[in-house]
Structures are given as structure tokens and as C-alpha cells.
Image (cartoon, rainbow, N blue to C red; front, side, top):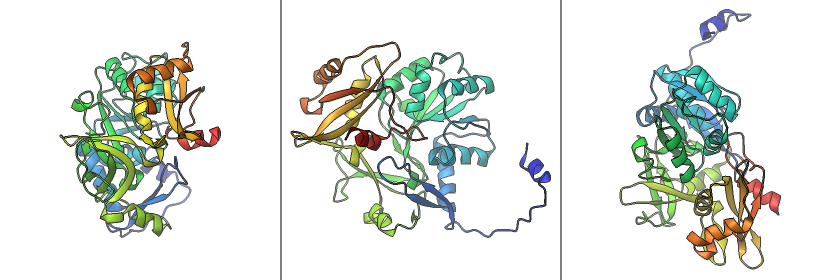
Length: 371
């Protein structure tokens, strides 16, 4: 039913007066995912949201002829403000589901001829592993997006191979920037696999050291942003707000490198860097290596307290259905390609990894469960 029909059937007439809003007025309070700590309420203005809508329409090619399937809850900022909001704004068709069940998503794409779809890597992996996944059933799909966490390169290669008709985008950002900051375009998916691309319209993004100086190509620094997309601050938390905006740039908490062409690659969250034996290890590098094993469905790497190493590199691995894998095989594989200090000291096989409703792996919960 249309909104007009619903209003006509209302038990009483709704007296809606004109509301005078300005660009800097508060429009949304969207909470961060809370994968590392308690969720914080990011206060977004009308200007931030509308500015970000324009960036999405331009860089993500959101169009009126799109038929979008929304798999994540609409309290997730990417689903709400990168796809649902802009698609409503320009008049596209929208189909919303309550939760991302892989088999149901595949069926809905086929039944409703969905041509545009966004999901985090964990949902894409679940769909790939579903026996119903095929290019025939997903023949209508033309635009596919991933984000909210890092897509393993091996999974991306499998997706592009099995869905040759689909153009892929990698979206990167944070709730605090409404949430889009950078994007890797379809033509760069394999050429710059693993990168989160370049800043979108209306966003300035840098990779800096602790003194806010731009790092040279290949050197790890922190991603910082400046943009009209950015939040007004955290709800009732001026201290966290001040910390986030030190130096007049928003500090993402993500560590990354930038190459000679300006493409940014996220290495890890600051809090996920593993300090082992006096060395720093990026969990993503170890995860990418383990994903090369054909038996692996999902993996998460964390550091756990260790009397010798301070933190021991520990891998939690989900094996594909019908496959077998031994701990030593994973460790030996890593030793063939990685420096010794980066290799897992222990591999734990699990049936599933803990995730929040948006599909992000909860490494904090893995740590808590292991202590």
C-alpha cells in the first residue's frame, strides 16, 4: 500500500504541521556497531545525510531504475543511509527483509529480479557456500556492493568469477561519517583487490602518523577524514567527541596504507593489532593467508594473552561443509608465506564465528570467550 492509502485508513486524521528545519539541525542518532566497546550515538545533521546521499548517487551509481534488496537491519547506517535513503530519494524500488538468511536472499533476488544488492562479507560468504548459489538464479543482478568489514581477497575473486555479469563496489566508512568515506570502483576490483579505494564526493581522506603528517606510500598510518558528512558529535559524550576530532580531522581508528596512485588499503583496527614478541601483526594479513586454503569458509585472527609472547597470534577457523583440515596444516601454510612471528601459535576450529546483527565478526567476544 502507498503512504496515502495508509493515511486514509488511519482511525483519525493526522494533524501534521509544517516543521522548520535547517541544515545543521539534528536528523538522526545512529549507534556505532559496538564490536570493540559500548555503542556510541553518532548525531547526524540534515546536511550530513543529504550530502552523503549525493555522494552515493554519484559514486555508487544509485539509480531510479534500481530494484534493491535490503538485507541488513535499517538501524545499520550503511543500509539506511547509503542505500535505502538515497534510493527513496530518487524513486527506486526497495525490498526489505528482516534478517540476511543466505538461501532466502538468493531466492528473493531470483523471484523479484533484484538488480542491486549490498551485504557485508560474512553474508556474501554465506551465499557463496549455499548450494542454491548460481549465476543463473542471480541473473538479474547487475550491481553488487560489499562493506561494513574487510572482504577477503580470495572470496572477492570467487564472487567475480561466479557472477561475471555483476559489477562490484567496495564501500568503506564509519557510522560517524554517515557512513560513506571511500569507494573502490568496479574497474579496480581485481587490479587493486583488497583496497577500499579513494575518497568519494564531498570527502577528504588522509593516512597520517601520530603527528598528523601524511605517511609515505606503503607506510602504515591512521585514516582521518574531513567532510560535511561527518557527525555533530557523540550523544552525551563530549570527551569522546573531542578525542575523535583531534587536530580538526575525524580519527577513524583504522590503520591503513596508501599507494602511489592514492588508493587506500585498510590494514587493521588499531585495537585489533596484535603485539607479539615485540612485533606488530595485522590480523587481516594472517586472515587473508588462511583464506587461501580451499577448506576454509571463515576465519578470524586475534591476539590472546601469552606469558612468552605477550600476545599469541590465534586463528579461529570455520571449515567448509564436507571438508577436513588439521591445525598443523594451517600453521605450516602460514609459515610458507609469512614471517614466523606473524604465524598462528594456535588454531581453533569452531562451527561459527560470533557476529552482530549486521554480520560483523565480534572479535571482542572471541577474546572474552577465550580468557
